[in-house]
Length: 382
Image (cartoon, rainbow, N blue to C red):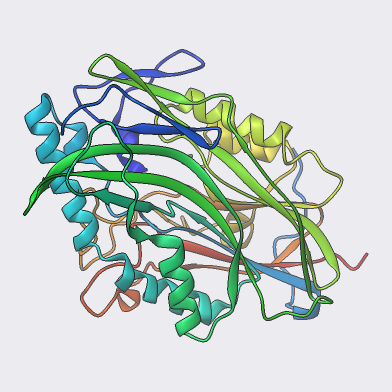
């Protein structure tokens, strides 16, 4: 959620950021949500940089922030109830305009071309609405389920994938205008891991799915309400072509560097504590040299992009949101998405996807506001 990068930093372990903005809603906590007072309206290198590909001794992974369709910037700029309702209306209109059903076809085509064994996804939005508005009830009518839309696009492209773990992060709701009056708009932010289903048991086995909330989460104040931006991590143990490793994904806090660093250490002290080799893939909202990045390296993880492309910045963020994703020239200017590996892997290939104009949809939309990463990791001989 890149809009949060714009907010100032707190010096507290739980950053509280005071905003001149209004978001009404419910935030998911431990798989249940609580309603906010109603309104109307996250050393040693672990392997060699590159290796000759041997697909019988390798695994290909992908990470992609697929963009929820808005950065909620108009909601966050609201100063009163009227501008909040207008903000919800404009931001949800942007969700419609940045058509995920159309973008999902482009994402599915990239997955089909690269054939990753595992895919880490961030901002896997679930948008729900309710007409007419009832500020005391959560919206339940599904407008866009990004996970189902993408899986259906993959199936239509002849690809065979399933979600092996889906994690709910935060849940928020607001009221906007529609042609028939006020209506509720609800966003549930999720991360997910997809795995291929067309491989034999000898080539792929997925086990031990885990997920957990972060203990450190950022907060900001909305009209007297402290709003928790809940995040967490998900992982599976994947035996791919004879080698088992733990695959972790997360979307670290974009609001506070302090909280983001604490979340990075939670990853290192949580799912990364295993005798298995580990691959972490996701949107970590940090750039090389910052504390979370340095913490990963100090824990023995390799920045696989830097190992293969030491002279290439490998920018993954961001296209022109908050307003849309129709810029004809790529605006990617920073690197916040990574594949980190530990445990003796060599990287036989790593490249970006969704970062060239040719990959845009027929109407000119970028697949997402991020570039994705595809990495092929070669197992050691022993």
